[in-house]
Length: 85
Image (cartoon, rainbow, N blue to C red; front, top):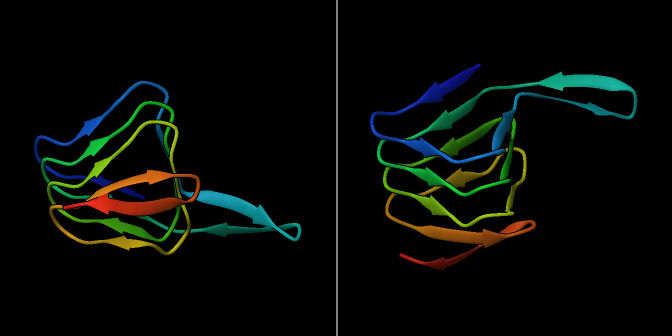
């Protein structure tokens, strides 16, 4: 359910969350991390997410379900917003 690309960095207490209860229904999906991606400390990545190559997500961020993050981008916040290339 989780795919991690070459040289990707998942820092302390960050986590891909492949399942979530919504209105008492368990929903599941995959999380794909691209190559050379850096996921900040205590960042949560919800299911059905695709993170491109060389993406940097700052600490304490939340990637909402179904997001697709393009290559060579920088994101931060809860929920995330693009802050740079």
